[in-house]
Length: 383
Image (cartoon, rainbow, N blue to C red; front, top):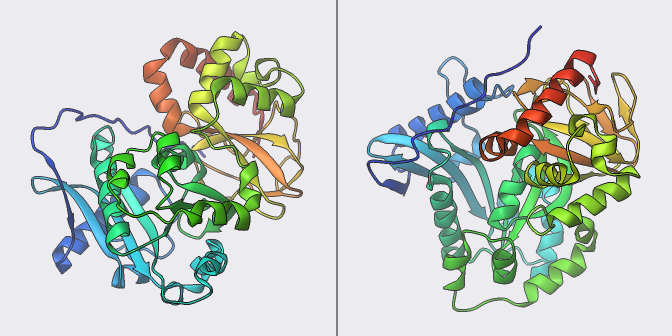
């Protein structure tokens, strides 16, 4: 069976009307957002969405009952949305408290359940407008709401292929990955709202609005590094240089990546470096966590760098084999479960960033595509 899904075409970069950011207030506005969610998640990306209203093509859940539903519109056209829940830890579902390690963050406040936390979810932009400022404008509104509600820690999650996007905004990975029944494999982040130096370091589009904040809690950053010392080993995609990433990968693979990884065959070092830095990033997967989930959407290509895995498919972990289905060129579906047997690090090559790379560096991208076509014919993937 052919599981391959079509590539979205991003266009409409020149807009005739301004983008307007607002908060849905009426049942009609909220229903329009639920419909956009379904259209993108179910019809474009093909997530399983076990809890969606498929008969009416709507996607909503219990967090909508008390969430702030943001929208981005051009005229009357809804082009994007995001949901923000703000509350005490006791307001959030227990599974979110567990996944985001909220009890550990509560220690910063001496365990008093009086401080607001935030969880951002269901953020998306219609395909035609993904090159516009809509996402940045939604995030700017969210950051302003952080300030208005005295939020110090803002949580968010995403599928692996979008990790660089969230790190660019200034989120920090927590190193916690889990399988969501609707969206598949997710990894979790936190934003330290007062860490303006980090926002500057990653080139966040939020730095201008953040710099206007009059008072900063300078204890937050030191406390985070102490309490979450384990996150120091995570390689931030926005802070690692092209040369640094190459050295890290050489150390993991025992040789230059273009000598080991078949999809880089024939690429000179300069081209291989550029491709890996623009499209790839390293993801730690703790022992016992999922790396690939059967039936989940593959928006990436995964390569094992260190550690051992358990797979319901072929259990070969050499670097010339890929973990799960190859979703770098087209979205597809995973046919196996792959779980980290020990602590594992993988190289993730993102579908989202490869689409951009194909436009900016077509010569290199075409070489990679040629190699991938040969790999696919030879079935050099696990599952």
